[in-house]
Amino acid sequence: MNARGGPGRSRRDLLRGAAAGAGAAALAPVLAACASSAAGAGSKSSAAPAVANPTTVLHFAPNWQGAAWNKTALALNQDYFDSNYAPTHPGVRVVVNNGSVQGGASTQIADAIAGQGFLDVFQDCCQDLVVLYTAGLLTPLDTYLKQDNIDEALWPAGHIAVLTFNGQLMALPAYDGPCVIFYRQDILDSLGLPYPDSSWTYEQATSLWKSCVGKTSKGQTRNGCSVFDSGWDEQSNWWLHAFGATEMNATRTQATYGSAQAIAMATYIQENFANGVLAPRSGFSGPLNTGQVVFKQSGGWELLPAVETMGQSIKWDILPMPYFPAGRSTFNNIDFYVMNSATKSPDAAWELIKYVCAEPDYQRFQMQATLVQPCLLSLWSEWETLVTGTAPLLKTKGIHWYQDAATGGYAWPELFFEYQAVAADNLIVNWMGQVEANKTPPAEALGQLQQQLSSLEATGASEANLTAANSKKFPTNGPAMAAMPTGI
View (tube, one colour):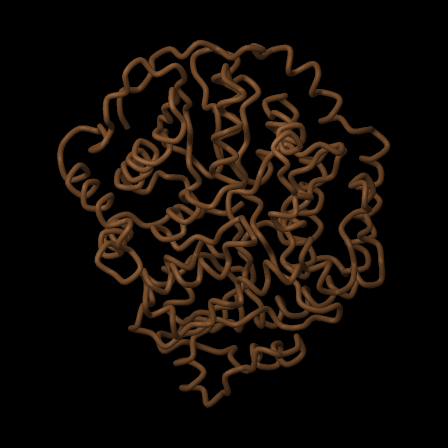
């Protein structure tokens, strides 16, 4: 989706500090043990108890924004599974591996072809879903859900929709991170501008953002609002819903970019990028902190960086997205967990992905340590209690707007066309990029986009057709591990 790797030392410090905070008592012993192991040499987990002749070893990559930001994250996860999962799943040991939010698809495919190792359950994001599906590395989960009487309504409908191909659910949500608006109250104060009310409309928002355009104290350009900072393939869906349009039909085979509502959306985009009201910006370490933007649309994955970088040194708060012509609309991540079709232990792998995605304990652990939002709708109120206990300054911030977006049904993930999804996304990026850059009139750009997407449809669902052929390259019972890690 976008680069979401977290900072290093400051995040470790926050994790350790969480152990001393209210609401973090359950995590304190784990954090204390991991702090000592991370400080020492070597890479072994501090609390990896010897397991006598485990019958099954599952390799797992967690969704801790890649789990790559420091050894503490890996140690926390390994300790958690050794202490909590193993006792309730006898004969199974989960070995935690380093993960990456992006790039997992290519890694898994290469490993499976070489037969030299694989992850049984792992997280990934974005277009990797299509690549993994095409390669035949995704195990359909519908049968498992049915056998355990698990209802898809546990998770947001939009998130489930994007993970479904040809009527089969191919992955489960890793977490939900709907976008809200962070804004600098101190800059509004200095400009003599009012704080917006949460019932604001997009006309009111646009007017306020326009009033913020100018220069910073250091002479840099200041824009009004930074919109979600990823490609147009990812953000088009929520923009279209905001103006009453759709990206594709219900079967995800036909584009619907040519409508009057879609052209109205593109017209708004072009005008407000051209006049500096909107700006594509990235990261809390940059434009929001330096005041180059006053408002920033951002997802749940940036809540912890916001706490770390802005903290109490800057006066800030959180608002929902404004009401657009068709109501509220905002982006939601599509990060997911998959069960590798190459696993040698499918039933055990299912129990692991179910534990991570459909049961609450691991999500509570993840919420407290990283502030990331749950994928289970039932945990949202609990999330607010946990994160305000870990980071008390959030008690004064409007973090309930995350829950409002997730449970209110106006957070829209990126969708993938069933036919030539990657090629379709490239077309969307091209034509919407020309709109944003003020190079092509909106009606012409979207007309060309609609025509070219329709021509792709005529070629058929190429990714789906490749699935059977590609899957033959992969072992059906799982490749042998070249070497089982003894620690992390």
